View 1 (tube, one colour):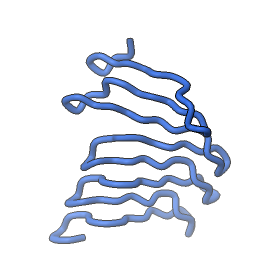
View 2: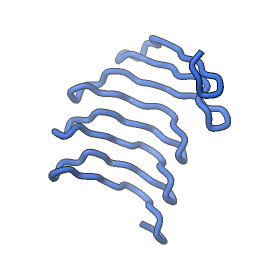
View 3: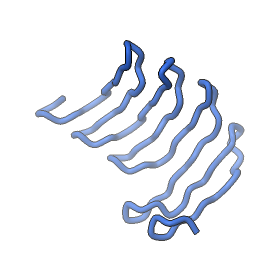
Length: 101
């Protein structure tokens, strides 16, 4: 904490196992956010830019499964691109007013 605001890495534990490793800048989530299962295996990486989502990687049983990139306009998602483990684009989802179309 700096002047009462979260800054840098903040870890959350359940029974001595890290379940979240979040990063903050002036109390706003920023940078890589890592989340783990109850047995300590990685489940997701989220990448945030001053609180705004950018992209995410998802894991199953600690193994990388897919990558998701989100594009925003006026803090609303307008497009989501999903990639497989080899980096190949597998789908594009488009949104208008936060609704998929």
